[in-house]
Length: 115
Image (tube, rainbow, N blue to C red):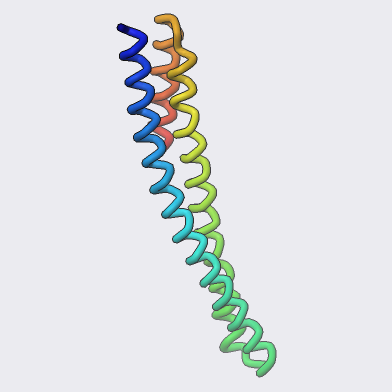
């Protein structure tokens, strides 16, 4: 019966993690859309400023291009969070003996703190 309980816990944890990952993927799509928008606007401003020889468009375009770094960092963080979440059910499955379960619980708490 203990194995059934462990399997049920793993199933529930896996379902919650899958839900969290799907939410992260939705956020990831939003970040990619913002990233593409910022890049397009910045590039358009730089091109229009270059064509018309207007620094008043080139400088804001360059600033917008620099702001692209924030969404990229956010995207990388979401990917790292997804990887951490995907590791947790595997750790639970590998924890057969009591010592392994304790070590897995400690590692899981560290991973959760990083997320």
